[in-house]
Amino acid sequence: MTTLHFESINVGDKLPAKEVPITSSLIVGGAVASRDFTTVHHDKKAAQKAGLPDIFMNILTSNGLMSSYITNWAGPDSTTKKIDLKLGAPNLPGFVMTITGEVKAKNEDHGTLEIEVTGENNVWGMHMQGTVQVQLPKGAQS
Amino acid sequence: MNPEETQAFEEKIYAFIGRENGPPKKGHDAVNEPMIRHWAEIMGDESPVYTDSEAAINSSKGGIIAPPSMLQTWSMEGYSMAGDFVQDVQRGLHNVFDEHGYTGVLGTNTTTEFFRDLKPGDEVTAHTVIDSISEQKATARGIGYFIETVTTFTDQDGEDVGRQVFRVLKFVPADGDASASSESTDDESPAAPTRIASPRGHDNGWWWNAIDEGKMLIQRCKNCQTLRHPPRPMCGECQSIEWDSIESSMEGEVFSFTTLHYPKIPGYDYPLCCAVISLNEGTRIVSNIVGIDHEDVTIGMKVKGNIEQVDEKTMLPQFYPAQAGE
Ligand SMILES: [Zn+2]
Image 1 (tube, rainbow over the protein chains, first blue to last red):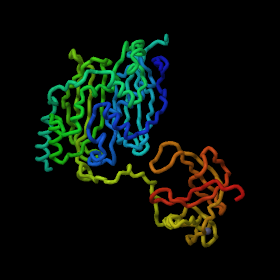
Image 2 (cartoon, rainbow over the protein chains, first blue to last red):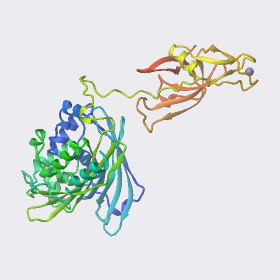
Image 3 (tube, each protein chain N blue to C red):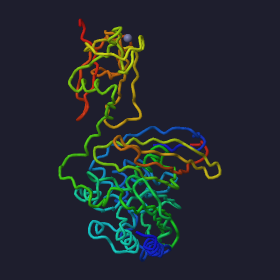
Image 4 (cartoon, each protein chain N blue to C red):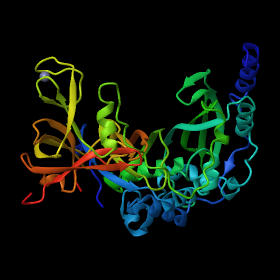
C-alpha cells in the first residue's frame, strides 16, 4: 500500500467506487468495535420498537467506513484531519451501500484535500454524505 | 401547546444550553492495539499503520496509530448502554422533550476534527457540553428542535486531541408516536419496494385493466381503422373519437433501446434495458427487454412479448428475444 502525493492529485479526481454489502454481521461488528452497545444496533426487537424493520448501522460505523474509504485510497502516510458527516436513510441488513468520492478542493498551504464522499444504499438512497479533509505528504521523492 | 405553554417549554429546554453533560468521561482502556485491529478488520481498513507494527515504524507515523475515526470509541460507556439509559444531563434534556410530545430522535450531523494521531497508551477523556438548541423548526420528520452537543477530547496531559459536534433532531413524529409505531412480528427483511404504479385515467385505464387480465390491446379508430398507442381519445388521422381495440400478437422488433444503470430506483432490476418495440401490427410500445444480457440487445432484433407479474401488484408486458425459426 503506497501513499499518494499531494502534487499528483487534482481537483475533480474521482475515487474508485466501493460497494459495501450491509449485513447483520457488519452492523453488529461495527457497533461492538466502536463500543456502541445501544440495543437498536444489535437487537432486532429493539430496532422494531424504534420504528425500523431491523437493526441498523450506528453512526460510528458510518464514520469508520467513510474514513476507511479514504485511507485505503490515500495510503498509510496520509492523515485524516476532519470528517463532516450528514446522515440520511438508515443502513439495514440486505442493503448494498455504494461509496463514491471526488476531490473538491486542495489547500496548498496545508497540503490537504477536501474530498466529498457519498454513501448511497440501493433501497432507501442516501445514507451518508460528507466531506473528509485529508493531508497528504508533499514532494514526489519516494 | 398554546403560546404560553410553548414559552414555558422553551424556557425549560434553553436552560440546558451551556451545561456540561456530567463529569468528564475517561475511557476505561487506554488506546490499544487489540481494539484497533478489531476495528480495522470490520471496517475493512487496510492501512498497515493500524495493524502492522513493523510497517508502521517504517512509515511517517513512526509506529502504530489508532484510526482517527475511533476517537469517540475510546471513551464510550460500553455494555451498560444496552441497559437503562444513563441519567446524565443530556438524557434529562431529552426527557423534557419526551414529556412534551417530542419523542422522536434522529442524529442528523457529526463533524469531527482530529488534532493529532493517537498512539497505544494514550488515555482519552471526553468533555461534553450542550452547546446550542435551535428555534422551533418545521422539518420533514415533524416539528422539532436541533440540539448540538460539543465534545472535546483530551489526553493524559490535558491537551486537546480532537473535537466533535453532534447534531440531533428531537421532534414530534408526524404520524403519532414513533416509539409506538407498528412492531412487526415477522422475521422477514423489509418488504421489497414495488414499482411505481401505472397511472390509470379515463383515457388509458382500460388498457392497463386488460394487461391485468393478460391481454395487450392496441387502440383502433372505428372510422378509419388506424391503430394507435399509447391510448388517447382522438384519432390523429381522421379526428374521430370513436374507437375499439384489437389484441396484439406481442411480436415485433427492437426499434431502439437504452440500458439504465443509475440511478437505481427501488423495485427494478438493473441493468434495466428499456426499448421501443415496433410491433408487427404497426404501432410501437415502450417496454423492457429481458431474458438476454443487455450487451447483446441489438436494433432490429426480433422479440416476443409476454405479460408477466413483475412484482406483488404489477402486471407488465416484458419482451424476450424471439426463438430462432419463430
Ligand atoms: Zn381515424
